[in-house]
Length: 267
Image 1: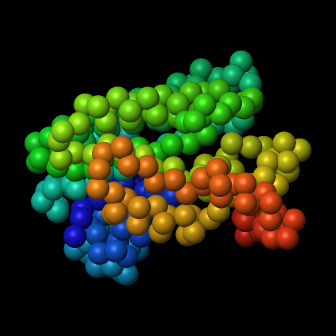
Image 2: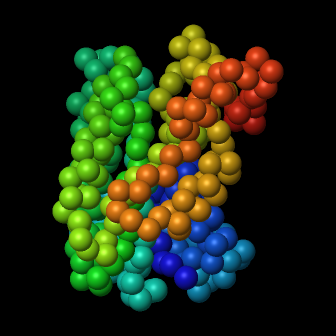
């Protein structure tokens, strides 16, 4: 029975991951910036999986002291932290870099990059002390060198995380610690939709692609969790939307009409 910390797990992919770990008899630490939201999610999940299996603590991933407190919370509740998943992230509306505010740019770099670096440091230090553990960082658009107008800041943070993972994998070589990668693909969440002005023509074009390549949280997260639990070496990568799968989706798009946004107001 593994104990798992998932940052940014009060909604979206993070919550989906947390619930699927619980379904597989793991113990889970829920985390998000707002303690009231954390408590609400913990109470909801405890009803289905038991109060001894799930706990939570508010944590701003840009704050090193709060990250350390999150690690200590997991350790004190469950004895140790076997798996730490850096899922917390944010996006900003897609528009040219010169049109984005300094506040927006600072926030996305602090959360998506500095937050991952700080959290990785805390988790690795804890895993070194206990002698083992798995650290998982999330890929996103830009991780594989893809570029697109309006995605400069977001893509830069994700490309940097790819470098971070490769470097950390060398640092843990020869130990019982793994540094691994999760690649969820295109998942319909508030984060994805929040990138766009949903009244714009650009959104209508993007939505067509998302309906071909995208998936819902409940489709992707069980598969990701199974991949995490099967991983047995550092450098493991669990990728949902592979090149082959994307190619097949485009080939069959004309015969397989999907509307992933039908139940989302305003999308």
